[in-house]
Image (cartoon, rainbow, N blue to C red; front, side):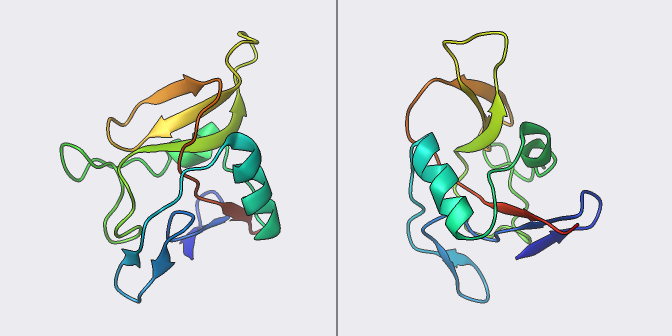
Length: 121
Protein backbone atom coordinates (compact mmCIF):
# COMPACT_ATOMS: atom_id res chain seq x y z
CA UNK A 1 0.00 0.00 0.00
CA UNK A 2 1.10 3.55 -0.74
CA UNK A 3 0.02 6.42 1.50
CA UNK A 4 -0.98 9.71 -0.13
CA UNK A 5 -1.07 12.04 2.86
CA UNK A 6 -1.98 15.08 0.73
CA UNK A 7 -5.26 13.51 -0.46
CA UNK A 8 -5.72 11.19 2.58
CA UNK A 9 -5.75 8.11 0.37
CA UNK A 10 -4.23 4.65 0.53
CA UNK A 11 -3.33 3.22 -2.89
CA UNK A 12 -2.72 -0.37 -3.92
CA UNK A 13 0.97 -0.54 -4.74
CA UNK A 14 0.39 -2.95 -7.63
CA UNK A 15 -2.15 -3.01 -10.41
CA UNK A 16 -4.88 -5.61 -10.02
CA UNK A 17 -3.52 -9.09 -10.77
CA UNK A 18 0.04 -8.29 -9.68
CA UNK A 19 1.65 -9.09 -6.33
CA UNK A 20 4.34 -7.14 -4.49
CA UNK A 21 7.55 -9.09 -3.94
CA UNK A 22 9.01 -6.57 -1.49
CA UNK A 23 10.95 -4.98 -4.36
CA UNK A 24 8.63 -4.80 -7.36
CA UNK A 25 5.19 -5.72 -8.59
CA UNK A 26 5.33 -9.11 -10.24
CA UNK A 27 3.10 -11.07 -12.56
CA UNK A 28 0.76 -9.84 -15.23
CA UNK A 29 -1.69 -7.08 -14.39
CA UNK A 30 -5.21 -7.89 -15.55
CA UNK A 31 -7.36 -5.72 -17.78
CA UNK A 32 -11.02 -5.58 -16.70
CA UNK A 33 -14.29 -4.04 -17.84
CA UNK A 34 -15.59 -1.09 -15.83
CA UNK A 35 -18.13 -3.33 -14.07
CA UNK A 36 -15.48 -5.91 -13.14
CA UNK A 37 -13.15 -3.12 -11.99
CA UNK A 38 -15.77 -1.71 -9.63
CA UNK A 39 -16.51 -5.14 -8.19
CA UNK A 40 -12.81 -5.93 -7.64
CA UNK A 41 -12.22 -2.70 -5.75
CA UNK A 42 -15.38 -3.12 -3.71
CA UNK A 43 -14.37 -6.66 -2.68
CA UNK A 44 -11.00 -5.25 -1.59
CA UNK A 45 -12.85 -2.68 0.57
CA UNK A 46 -11.75 0.08 -1.75
CA UNK A 47 -13.05 1.92 -4.78
CA UNK A 48 -12.02 3.09 -8.22
CA UNK A 49 -10.22 6.43 -8.02
CA UNK A 50 -11.66 9.65 -9.35
CA UNK A 51 -9.94 11.17 -12.37
CA UNK A 52 -8.27 13.89 -10.28
CA UNK A 53 -6.97 11.36 -7.75
CA UNK A 54 -5.39 9.12 -10.39
CA UNK A 55 -3.98 12.12 -12.30
CA UNK A 56 -2.25 13.20 -9.08
CA UNK A 57 -0.05 10.09 -9.45
CA UNK A 58 1.23 11.13 -12.90
CA UNK A 59 4.94 11.83 -12.79
CA UNK A 60 7.12 11.66 -15.88
CA UNK A 61 10.16 9.58 -15.00
CA UNK A 62 10.79 8.42 -18.57
CA UNK A 63 9.48 9.21 -22.04
CA UNK A 64 6.95 6.38 -21.91
CA UNK A 65 6.12 5.75 -18.25
CA UNK A 66 4.37 8.19 -15.93
CA UNK A 67 4.41 5.94 -12.82
CA UNK A 68 6.82 6.74 -10.00
CA UNK A 69 9.06 3.63 -10.09
CA UNK A 70 9.81 3.87 -6.36
CA UNK A 71 6.16 3.97 -5.29
CA UNK A 72 4.61 1.79 -8.02
CA UNK A 73 7.42 -0.46 -9.31
CA UNK A 74 6.55 -2.71 -12.22
CA UNK A 75 3.21 -1.00 -12.93
CA UNK A 76 2.18 -1.18 -16.58
CA UNK A 77 2.51 2.14 -18.42
CA UNK A 78 -0.94 1.94 -19.91
CA UNK A 79 -4.58 3.01 -19.44
CA UNK A 80 -6.32 2.75 -16.04
CA UNK A 81 -10.01 3.11 -15.21
CA UNK A 82 -11.38 5.93 -13.08
CA UNK A 83 -14.82 6.26 -11.50
CA UNK A 84 -15.23 9.69 -13.15
CA UNK A 85 -17.89 9.94 -15.82
CA UNK A 86 -18.31 12.17 -18.87
CA UNK A 87 -21.58 13.90 -18.06
CA UNK A 88 -21.63 16.02 -21.23
CA UNK A 89 -21.52 13.05 -23.60
CA UNK A 90 -23.87 10.15 -22.75
CA UNK A 91 -22.22 7.91 -25.36
CA UNK A 92 -18.89 8.08 -23.53
CA UNK A 93 -19.22 6.77 -20.05
CA UNK A 94 -15.93 6.84 -18.11
CA UNK A 95 -12.58 8.57 -18.07
CA UNK A 96 -9.31 6.66 -18.20
CA UNK A 97 -5.82 7.90 -17.39
CA UNK A 98 -3.00 6.75 -19.65
CA UNK A 99 0.31 6.27 -17.83
CA UNK A 100 2.14 5.87 -21.15
CA UNK A 101 1.20 9.31 -22.52
CA UNK A 102 0.19 11.13 -19.34
CA UNK A 103 -3.17 12.00 -20.92
CA UNK A 104 -6.78 11.46 -19.89
CA UNK A 105 -9.16 9.94 -22.43
CA UNK A 106 -12.72 8.70 -22.77
CA UNK A 107 -13.90 5.11 -22.71
CA UNK A 108 -17.31 3.80 -23.64
CA UNK A 109 -16.30 0.20 -23.04
CA UNK A 110 -13.22 -1.95 -23.20
CA UNK A 111 -10.84 -3.50 -20.76
CA UNK A 112 -8.25 -1.45 -18.92
CA UNK A 113 -6.04 -1.82 -15.88
CA UNK A 114 -7.24 -1.18 -12.33
CA UNK A 115 -5.62 0.38 -9.27
CA UNK A 116 -7.91 0.53 -6.25
CA UNK A 117 -7.78 3.24 -3.60
CA UNK A 118 -9.14 3.63 -0.08
CA UNK A 119 -10.10 6.76 1.84
CA UNK A 120 -8.24 7.25 5.12
CA UNK A 121 -10.95 9.46 6.60
